[in-house]
Length: 447
Image (cartoon, rainbow, N blue to C red; front, side, top):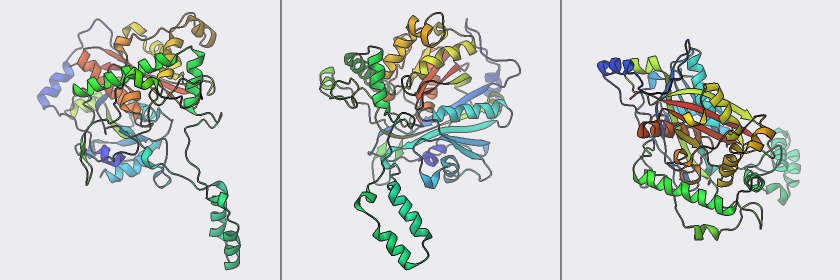
């Protein structure tokens, strides 16, 4: 899947004259630029993704386009790893036809895996190690690895070591029906054994987020995603032909319902009184994403027209039990402080929507003086993003959430929204398993 996408990155090269003129363009804005003296400007040249698909529906193919000799390094993220392709970045690169001289490695950081891939790319470029890096993420939830039970694995390993027929027969005779029970992957915290949905339900209750608020936010996400899709704003999605099937060109999880239909669903995790349901949760999704990240100097020299500057970023972590999904609340003020910006300076917000309850809890935490003072050591609250700037093209609840691919979608969406809406600064934020989180400031490139 990832190899199919890597060759899909396509940017519109400029002529040499246009590139020279473009490099001289100045940003006309009352806001300052975030360029730093002595630090390379790192730009997002382009970003693509496959349609995000409900797990179990349709496969993914590639579209050609990216000059392979322009890439110095490849970094990919994945969460549910396939043992045969543990370094999926390398296998995807070779499968896509990149030179075997191009190094590649894979990162995993739960739902912010492709964010980690992108910031790794930024670091490589800022350090002068590379000029052009492809970063991305891939998740294929329709075919996750399923293991034998521990007892069965132990028996099979012993069989492999057995030297006589008698020893092998003895081991085979020890197999019981219980040995054949498979171990299914679970979206649960290793440290707490609690599923993320269960944690989201508790978080919503702790912040007084009602079932009605969650359903309303989820419906908003689907309606905005449908509007964006119908208006052809989701231009990062690439079409492809699945052999023996139709062309797939759209996310297929966007399904606006009615509040009455959503109200009929039963709690999915804490039963019977929980508030998190299938309708107000992100769904298991297949998908891949990729972005081409370059130094500004190299991008312009090669005739590319960047979409945005990738500026400051932070990673945070907190208690994985009671604050598992509060990454955006902790990361947002830190990245704003690092950038010298305020919440009011941000024109576009894109937060990962794991659950409607998680989003609403974060917004309430950010808007709470008590939470800021008690848990964050602040004098006042962070402040909540205004909803007219927040996830206005839908989010993970409606578009889908292939764990390791969502980060690139968020960043590319910010770049496209800044271009469309004429803003200068965007902010991406996301939570992740383990009580971790991420935020990044993105600056529009002069158009």
